[in-house]
Amino acid sequence: MSTKVAIIMGSKSDLNVMQDAADVLTELGVAYEITVVSAHRTPDRMFSYARAAADRGIKVIIAGAGGAAHLPGMVASLTHLPVIGVPVKSSNSIDGWDSILSILQMPNGIPVATVALNAAKNAGILAAQILSTADEYLVKNLIDFKENLKKKVEESAREMEGE
Image (cartoon, rainbow, N blue to C red; front, side):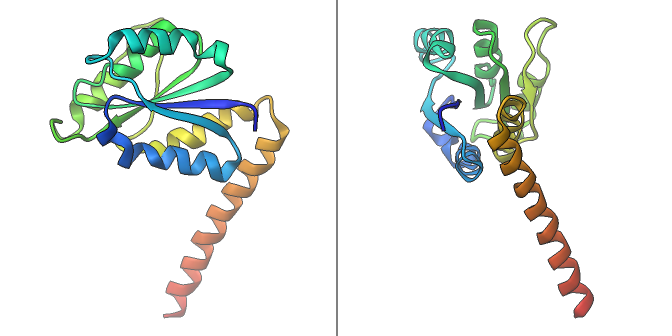
């Protein structure tokens, strides 16, 4: 587990959403670090964190933010690493749309892969899929993970059909 993913969020209150990324990365055998990096309240921390990520062995960054949600885009502007944005429906959010649009509508040249509102689990899976292009161990884990998803659906179907 030497390849790392960074999971960052704008506020500790986002952890209830972002924990899903950490959980699925653990399940898939991907090492990660997790912390709070606010684009608005700690811009110097964000700059140094994003610029030093690759030197620390980070390969993919998952950035979750609510409200104005500038964290994923700002981090993407500071690094060559792929950034996956997780829009978070926060207490100050406009039903999550402000977060979605802030992360989704990036200018050409600064891409951020964006998952659905509060879909940190999908961000973790996508990070693992990106890493799997150079890691056969992850390929096997992802195949097994998706096979288990298939089995759960088939079990549910059998249960419902039997009722």
